[in-house]
Each structure stands twice: as C-alpha cells, then as structure tokens.
Length: 238
Ligand SMILES: [Zn+2]
Ligand SMILES: [Zn+2]
Image (cartoon, rainbow, N blue to C red; front, top):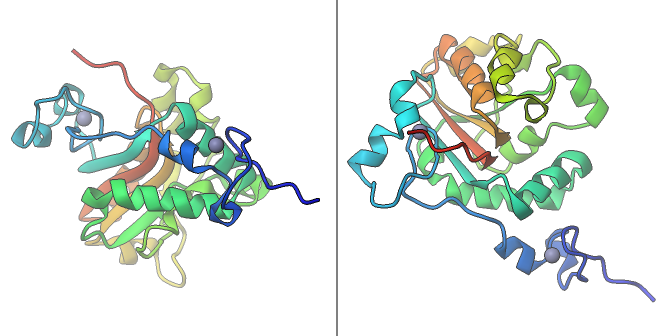
C-alpha cells in the first residue's frame, strides 16, 4: 500500500500532494502583514495611520536615511512562515518556491509594479556550492520579472539571525560588490537607470538589504525596492 505523503509542517496526509508539501490548513495559517504599513520598510503601523501618514513612514524610517524607497514582506517571521523559510532553505522544494512566489507576488504588488528587474541577495560562492542553490534566487525566479544577478558577496559572513542586533550592521558592511559581469555586460550597464527589487527570504534588521541597495545605487539604479517572504518584527520604536 502507498502511504499518502504528509504535510511537511503538521504531518497530516496531503490531499493534493502535487500542489506542494504543505496542507491547505497550514497555508491558511501563514501569518500575513496587512495595511497600514510603513511604505519604506514594510513594518505594520498602528491602525488608523493611512495614506499620507503611511507614505511619510514609521518613526524609525523618518529618522534614518536609506537607499531603499519601498519594502514589502508577506508576513512576520514567526509560526508556519518561519517553518516554511527553513524548509525552503534546507530542503529546496521547488513546488514550495512556486507557491511562496505566488504569495510574494500577491503581497508585493506595490514594489513589483513597474519594476524592471529582481535582484536576489547573493550567497557567498562557497556557501552556495555547499547548499547547491540560493533560496533568494529560487524565490526571485517566481516573480515574473527578469532576474539579474547584479551582486556578489565578497565575504562569507555568519548568518544574520545568529548575531546580536548590534553586530549585524558591521557583519554585512562592505560585503556586497557588483557582479563582475551580467552575461557579457558589465553589471552597471544593466542596472543604470533601472528600478530594481532586491529579493530575499527574510529581512532581519534590514542591514543586508540596505547594504545591497547601496551597491545598486552606486551602479546607477534609479530606484531600489525590497521584497521578502518574511520580516522579523522589530520592537516598536517610540
Ligand atoms: Zn499542514
Ligand atoms: Zn518604516
């Protein structure tokens, strides 16, 4: 007798295993970020702050300069979304990337609309070889825009999630550089004047995507936006 494959999160037998390794109930349980959101970082704002107030940003964004104009994520990095990120990262399930990409398109319309390219946050070549793939690139491939590998990681940093917040910015400062070439063209010639969306699985403090955005702006990007699957909830700033 063949056993039906089980949901990778809750272990109930799957009714439609061809639709991916997660059952319908677990998909519905994925936490989502809903408006009002800070337009710049994508963090939830206290309800009632809509329109002009959302565009002017959360207190943290109003205080800090950033190379990023707009960010969105599907949901907070907790519960089933956190488990899904782990599944994607360590087991590379293609059907999972397809469905997670659907969610990113749905929750990322504000950043994907009129964008020219998506740029995955790169892994260091050594880590990419060890893992066999880059989960950010797997997600970027689902977003119906040309994927441009415009960046490379020059240093194999420790994973951001393993570090205390104060160390994270230092951990990624200067670790990204332009790709040596994109196809046969220098990276800058492809990026100059373009609206690009940096794609990653999780935003932790924002230091990694900020670092990527700076390099893209140096390459002449007209605008840099960010789309991720999840973002780590930050303590509300005063
Ligand atoms: Zn399930
Ligand atoms: Zn913000």
